[in-house]
Length: 408
Image (cartoon, rainbow, N blue to C red; front, side, top):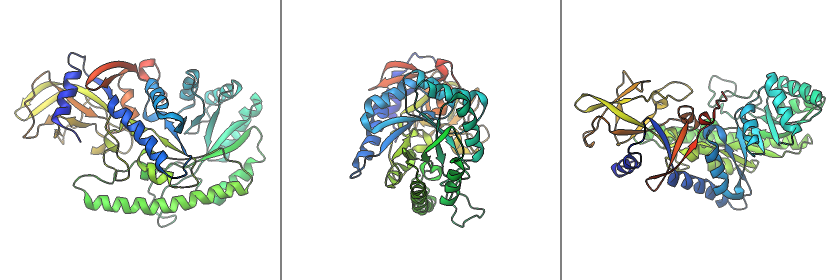
């Protein structure tokens, strides 16, 4: 996946630039856009669209690039906060679906302001408490708030047992639970339930083709396949129940990047959210179902040579969110074969690494390239992303942070 030739190309491209820095290889980034579009278009009779996950990008110019290059298959944004949604709306984006519910007063007022200004936005809900809070502010502002219900699509092979494979998000799991909430919503003014979302994170975000881990890979693929069969059946049952209840759903959202093909195969899904695919961070290297090209990197300088066969980089302590483990550390990718010291890992101010036997000599002032474990979180560390095309810097674009915003 990574080569010395690629290392030399990137090293030459950023020569003389201040470190640390982050960059996006547009050759890989644009290829990932085309790959996603081709996968969607390859399914016979498929009219599904791609909703871009802004959380996994956090760089507005690159979000814009996806829509410019993706064509009509790309439509709408899945945002992660109401404030982020309002900021993106100020830049001209419409069809906003807020992925996470919030009922704090400032967000509720902002939702109403967006609707009053004619901005199409849907908010997430999974409980009566959410609906009542949206209702109160909707009635107060004399607007009707469009609501998307979130369905829990985690896998529980033994029913209500200890085994729960997936994210802990919505309590809505069965057609009956969703139908009951819809019936309760009929008595609540100021809201309109018009969409359904189910995010299969245990499939979309779990590698199943790691080198040297064949037994684990087989188990993971078996689990994913079993889970996909169960959630597809249940999601279809929920959609049918909502239609039977008289709801006209504007969209049924599934996702994301790692389950692209299997999610699109569900006939009840009208759109899929894709975000991490475009950067292809470290956690998205090894999937059997999909294949993306690593596109987003950061670079550190070699600051010390503590002992033969070892270097120490300046900075690098950018762990990913979620349960802590080795896989959440940034991945040193170029030169290939670099390894962390088990008792130090990636440090805030220094990161020691061991060199493989075939590594070219590195000295103080040289560069090492990493990928963040996740996608958009990289942008919380840098104000700008350099843009590379064919091994040359062709531009610079601000991240959310570079434009003065941090939404969580």
